[in-house]
Amino acid sequence: MPQLPFFVAIPLGAAFVLPLLGRRSGRVADLLANATLALLAALAVAALGEEGSFSVGGWEAPIGIRLHLDGLSSLMLLLINGIGALVGVYSVEFMKRYGSIARYHGLFLFMVAGMNGAVLAGDLFNLWVFIEIAGVASYALVAFGREAEDLEASFRYAVLGSLASTLILAGVVLVYAVTGRLDLAHVAVMLADIGRSGPLHFAVGLFVAGLALKAALAPFHAWLPDAHPAAPAPVSAMLSGVLIKAIGVYVIARLVFNVLGATPEILAALRWLGMLSMVVGGLLAVRQQDIKRLLAYSSIGQVGYVVVGLGLGTPLGLAGALFHLVNHAVCKSLLFLDAGAVERAAGTRDLGELGGLGPVIPVASRTSLLASLSIAGVPPFGGFWSKLLIVVACIEAGQLGIAIAAVVFSVVTLVYQLRMQRGCFDRPAPAAAAAVVPGTPPLMAAPMVTLAVFCVGMGLLAAPGLAQPLGIASAVAVLAKGVLGL
Amino acid sequence: MIFLLCLGLVAVGIYGVLAKTNVVKIVLSLLIVEHGVRLMLVVIGYRSQGVAPILAVGSDPAALSASAVDPLPQALVLTSIVIGLSVLALLVALCVRLYERYGTFDVTEMRRLRG
Picture 1: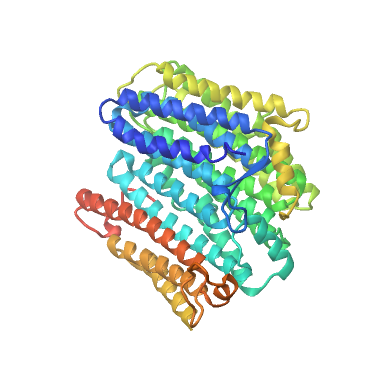
Picture 2 (picture 1 turned 90 degrees about the horizontal axis):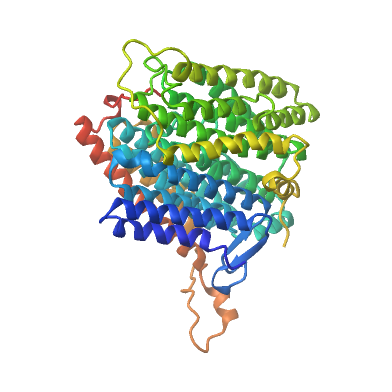
């Protein structure tokens, strides 16, 4: 498949050119970045349902480097580039007040290149390299506002993120020492031949700890509620909606199911991590005053659902997990864009000072309601079906305790989402409300409405039992097939 | 033996990241962790009395592969050092900015964020 390298090369090239061209005018940078992201989204749509490999430089694996596309990576590509393109449009208007727009777009495309590379990488080392690329860009984007809080959050995120990467690298090194291979399929085959040894178990532990840090699973979540709110709203949307999944959850799923083999111990560890995230994220979200912190804790909780579904290891659990991953990506990026609109209109993110914004920014108010209902699992939205699948899969696998917790924390999700909805939009404004900028510019409203349409549409698509919406079923098939062969 | 040194470096570094309060020392501890892992990576490709893995014109590939060190870990470690450098540059820039804002390198005095 000759188009695979373009998913990495196009954004990397554009990220390099942008700061050079954009010094003259921000408008050129806006146009170039959005054209690049739109092209990538079109490529991702075209790649849906395709399957194949690209050997870099014509060298075959295990000597050469491979990029590999299958059902799971094409689903992730669609999420990354689709949401990336919408967020890019939103950034044009939103990022005006931050200045240095060309550098922003450059870093953003750099991050997209890293994520695209991570989901396409066919070998362990390049997987690690792309995780690092996406990571470095995201550390810089979190600090983009240059306020004291942003710098502090970015520092904490960068230190923990690099520590996580180092653990992942150590895991890669151990796997190489044991098998002498780096290509995912070759590693899987070698491991099946030589069996599991002590160093390999240690490597699995390193992978799980490092990737849980990247995916912000409790108890490795401490950086996320600082980093995601500190970033500008479109960046938060991308970090919470896509990044923690592309370089966290996706990599966990790929390594555990396709390379290392889903042993009962690893699956149990995933269930525990997921369950703990569900509980910790849900409980801490309820008390937050800052709407973006609330959404960030909610992300921890919702990623917990996804990981619980993965940890069940049954086809139904995997289907629920991936479907919830897509739902959460769409809804949470929409909610962060809404939070950006609220911040822009009211000048604050504090629930104590917000209120009465419903008539002021009607687009944000309505789209946020749709996204909140979907993520909380109210029928007939997508979130209901994905949570239903996860709960049914839990019962089927005999995990009654997790099933009950999933239902309870679904209600908790509804509580905090409605608290935010009421605090921002529905109740009358407090007397001390800050200056209000009415209206949403069309370039900000369009991506929000598009994402809201997807939020609603996914529920309708999925209602008659997962009839291949967005290629989720083929992504599930990739994971359910077990370890790769040659 | 040398693997124990790697493990020691990683342990010392992780202790530093967790226990130190000075941002510069945290960054240095992070570097120690990374170097521990990189040392491990290089050691895996090592072979005593190995020769450089360069195939000269006319020499026998089988004889070379029997005596050469594994070149792959060396390539990997170079890549990882370059990536580490970019992260280090970013971290140091953040330290400088933090110092400008707070007038201190002490994380316990930077308390805008609740955990």
